[in-house]
Length: 542
Ligand code: PEP
Ligand code: MG
Image (cartoon, rainbow, N blue to C red; front, side):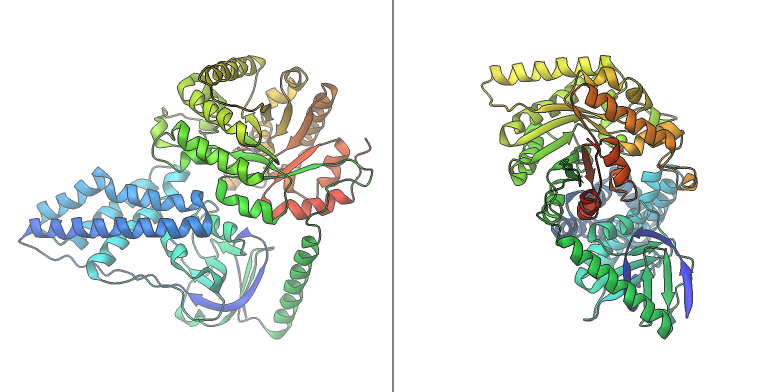
């Protein structure tokens, strides 16, 4: 029996046979060619085929893991059509008189090195993607198919790292866990395993050998442990834990349809956070009473140009109609910091988390803001919409937002376009907003506390830097006192206050939040029922 430690990206337990995912490692040879034009032609044809494969993969991924996660295939398509990428391959074929496979491998390697040297989390995460693109083109040229999971037994897939195209091509019903020796918490394996809801480990400290294939494995996503060849005692222990988990899940399902009300009778708004309309299935399956945070920046991140008013309207309308009259809080775009969109052409910033992001972009580039506001107000005719603004620090910002809202409303009315009457809320995620929450509360309809950023800015710790995880204490008394202050100020002004940061789903704090008077909790869809369970035996003392 061997035991290894990895970083868990999704909790839970999996017991099953190990399947080593072997990439079709391309052995690319450098071959001298005389007809470079013919070679460039071969490459161009392979590109076309790759683009068509990617568009099929995109469709498949949208169905399986949602638009935001499928968006990565858009990146692959962009990469294949990138002028620099194409020029580099053609120029290597031409100047070195070599085969297309070799020119592609060289180019993909060069781009991968360039990305990893960029010292940018997003671009480092794209290293696997550019290699994936290179391998796809070479596979097509060599007529080989990529390896995949086969067989009819559910397996724990073990790999160095998995490219998105590899995970999406797998038969998901057969995969109960991923264990990789590389990868980061932002890698696609991590994102996809969270979306699929299966326990997975990344950055696990072992060396993959052929002997592992077919052995029994246990993935403990609760403690980040991977056990190979467990003895009978360990197998029994984990089987019991697995059964307990399944029972808990069953028990939680019995809470579906129940009202979310405290012991002393206060109704709590228990909502879900989403990134795109594909997440709605999970919202409905977990019985959330509404959407407490729709991160609308994903509508922008999924595109390689600004989404038009009509495109945005279609997305917002679909969410509102699916929620059929339940509250839907759409947050205006929160681009910047960790969420970058090339086409925004933002200037390089030394400290982007404190730079031009979210509402700052909207107020300094009103044409972008106005398009989104028009789409939101038009969508408001189709359901119960509230609009929420991120990263607020001042009264001046709210006043400017109100002016813009009024301008858009006037414009739409004068065009004879029907609109609803959406509430206006703000995120409280800066210490400045907390300290002036008494004043802000008089100007808006609700507060939603963004504890992810509030913790970052209060403790002066980059939320993206995993090396500082031990210092990033979201239970810090400073953060909890701030939440209490915000709730008190909201109630003083007669408005409600909720939490939509990750802390909202931390069930060890639910009782404390409810006792503080928090009126709303908006959590990942999968946490709705566990949080409801906590609320049902908590007291609001109202
Ligand atoms: C937050 O900061 O807590 C929040 C909900 O917003 P985001 O995580 O999107 O920055
Ligand atoms: Mg935030």
